[in-house]
Every structure is written in structure tokens, then in C-alpha cells.
Amino acid sequence: MSSQQVSWWDVHEYVDSLLDEIKNWPMIGSPAWCALSDDDPAKLAAIYDAAQHWALRIESCQRQMAQTSRDVADAADWAAIGREAAQIEAFYKERPWLRRKRTA
Image (tube, rainbow, N blue to C red; front, side, top):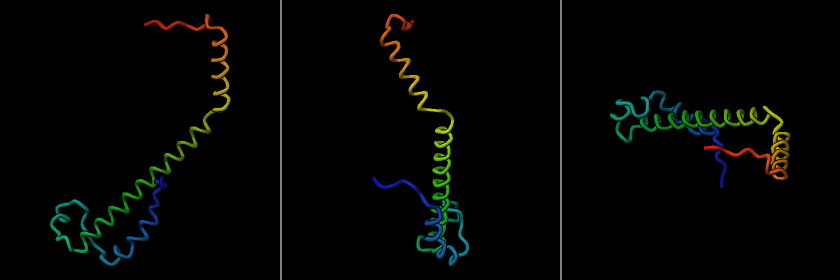
């Protein structure tokens, strides 16, 4: 499976020359954009601009998810928590009469 990482900069570099050439375009999906003919370069520029904004959003979300993952990893000594859980399970496995019974 290929990487799902998104690079806004690569998208931006790809569309930048076209957007510089067109200079002005309506917001994608707006009535002004819908009114443009399909062969109008401004219509394609709006699509390219939307694509780079979408790439920026995805990259920003990916960075935030990665940072959150690091924050969670740093929040506790997960190895110690795992060892403690294993010890508790082993303790009750050896002493099943001590395990609490669940009531409905």
C-alpha cells in the first residue's frame, strides 16, 4: 500500500504557474464559477486552487494527528501500565476466587 501522506507544497508548486498565469478566478462551485464555460482557464484555475487548499487541509490534519499521537505516547509510561495490567491479570488467574463477579 502506498503512503497516504499529503504534501501541500508539492501541489502548490504544481499549480502555481497556472494560477499566476490566470491571476483571477471565482470560488469553485460558486454561481460565477458555474457560469463559466468548461474551456475557460479560470474554471480550471479555480479547481486547481481548490485542490491546493484541500491538500493544505489534509496535510494540516495529518500533522495534528501525528502530534497528538506523540502527545499520547509521551503522556504516560505505557510499558509500565502494560506490565501492571499483565501482573493484575496473572494475579487473578492464580486466584480466581478473588475476582469480582459482575452483576447485571
